[in-house]
Amino acid sequence: MKIIRAALLASSVVLLPHGAQAQQMDAEVLHWWTSGGESAAVKVFADEFNNEGGNWIDTAIAGGQAARNAGVNRIVGGNPPTVMQFNTGGQFVELVSNGLLRDLESVAGENDWRSVLPAALADAASRDGKFYAVPVNIHGQNWLFTNLKVLADAGVEQPQSFAELIAAGPKLREAGVIPLGHGGQNWQDNILFDAVLLEEGGPGLMKAIYGDVDTEAARGAEFRKAAEVFAQLRALVDEGSPGRNWNEATNMVLTGKAAAQVMGDWAKGEFIAAGLTAGTDYGCTIMPGGYMMGGDVFVFPKVDDAAAAAAQDKMAALMLSPGVQVAFNEKKGSVPARLDVDVSSMDACAQAGMEALQNAEAQVPSNNFYSPDLVGSVRDVITEYWNSPAMTPDDFVENFVSAMESAY
Image 1 (tube, one colour):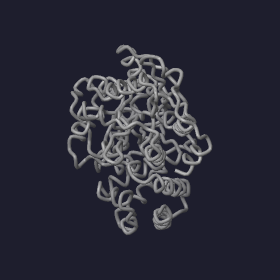
Image 2: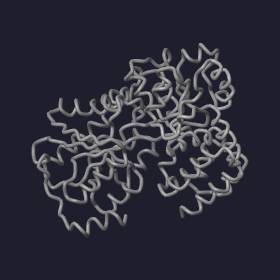
Image 3: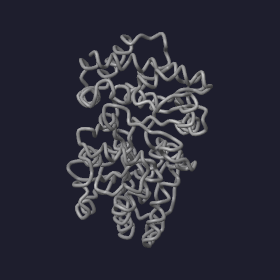
Image 4: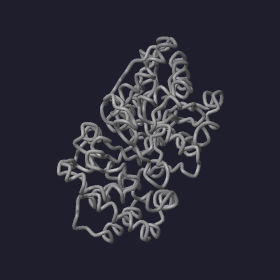
């Protein structure tokens, strides 16, 4: 919050109409979707907006953090993009609290968003009872993707749990493939650990750890078991894992170098972009415990120009319209944010995801729905443990508890 406040004071700039915004239905959209699957997905929005008389002006910046920082700098400097991809973490709260984003209640009310979105998703996109972001998808974060030919050649069935994946490791090694393609970056380590945590402790333990910040739960038997299972997964990855990008790990699976990857279903966009078919070329399993939900949102900075505001309203409604939701998520690899759409045209993985989400008890918010400070603290601890085979599960537990305590 200090960063944005300081920037506002320093600039003393009043938001002025952007040159592009002054044109009828022009919309500059800033986002960070640059991989093959991501680019194909965002093109769905662009094409639909252009088909409805708009003019999509694409500003893609690689890397979420770089794109968010660029967007925030432009917003506080008085030259905001018309629409911007964002997260619902700390920077989102700062922008809302400083009055820099439009509330979308009129569009949300007209299109009945609250009745069609999962409650946790609607809450994440809202502050003080008003929508300030449009959730455009639900990304399950605890999927196991596999190369089905690689599994068949090794005589391995599609694993349905981490225990089965670990048990398959030796056979896959004998077949000459890496059992688990993994990108050794802290957020990817965190996703892998949380998938194990959800399997071992269910939604209750996830909420206790990330929502209630319950240190006693972190010292409990289920958390410790998750730490043990997580450590066993180290034996499945290759030496090139540290620092690897997620899509590079996905490429290892789709080319048969690795057998499996635990990743959010944005990875599916890479399989789709490569022309592979779910259930035929690649397998997908929601790991046990529930459907760990994440997702993408877009925000709409305040603008003075009426034409730009009209373009924002058009874009917000369009992004959550039923047909666009299906078309966009077919490319993105995710499932629609609204649960009332017909997904019979989507692939087998998406249909399984939507079926799971119809059960409200299986809708498990990922850690991104909670405190960004806590997530930042524990990610470093998880990565340190992942990269330190000599560290015991008990040491990890105590380090994790210390990180929980230091975040507050």
